[in-house]
Image (cartoon, rainbow, N blue to C red; front, side, top):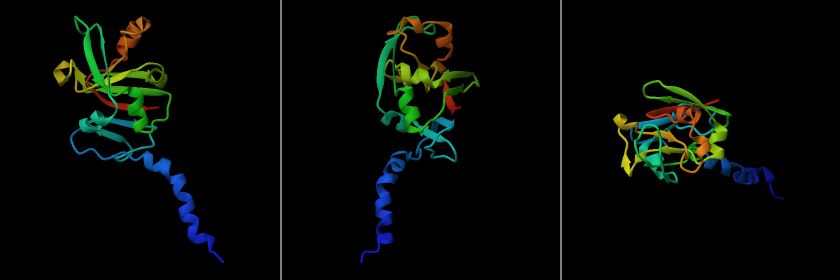
Length: 167
């Protein structure tokens, strides 16, 4: 007779596969972004911490857009906000973005699902310095959606981004 209790751990393995997919590697370099609050995938206490190499390994998107901060259209490159949130296992309705200078703005998570909001790490194919709104900048696809060219969405473009709190 087969003792089924010996094989029970093997039966549970397929159920654990999704949990393994949520594992987030530990940052090796300086942390440039932390995502906290309602996140399932953490690597630094109760937060998801990202160094620039981790952000570079996510799928990247690029587009050129005009903004009130630059005289002419500029090219922004980085991961989509929704991909960063997915990597952190974020579950919430609102993001509180905080910049290095403590600027704070609330962003509906639905924005990240509805539009290709980029967390830009490159400006015109070059890393952004803190002096030039870096190292990370939330940018909306203003070029494709004229309805986003309003003070509300411009205010959601947090530059010098350092944390996202998922609520």
